[in-house]
Image (tube, rainbow, N blue to C red; front, side, top):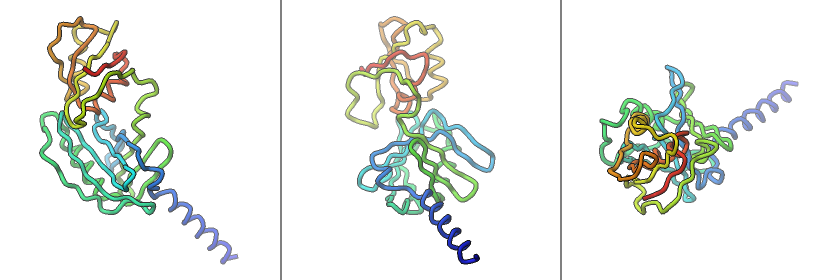
Length: 223
């Protein structure tokens, strides 16, 4: 009876461990956006999807944080047994501190450096640091169920600010650009002779994704 119990326990442990590693095939060519971070002070919502994690087909992971037009990138190798640990953080340049929550950025980097196990399903990726902290990410295409249409040609430089026309239609009012300014730190209105129903603005790619999910925006066109 004891031998049988031990065998069942061993199978359970192996099965549970199998659910906590990152599968390189399942993650290849996927992109994730941080929605929440869990710590000893509780669950916190991420700021406007500024943190992203991308896995390519060559076993490389790219982690990005973008404030305004600034982006810093980290890479680490991942395999069927999980990520190579620790994830080595190397900053490229300095963030625009006026538009960044540097406290949250530091907590994000520290958690990445201490990731010990992982949970993955079709829509959610959770990176865990021991029993306290975790980063909860969702697939980029799941940011909202019905994003506004996006037409035109994007800029070749993925790190450059993006300039687009926002069609706000009946939602137009004198203060709508101020609302966007408050919601998205890198959002910048450009001079335009158009009516209030069309706004010409510059932003980063993560803010563009967020604006596609904003109820005030009907459609977006690259300039």
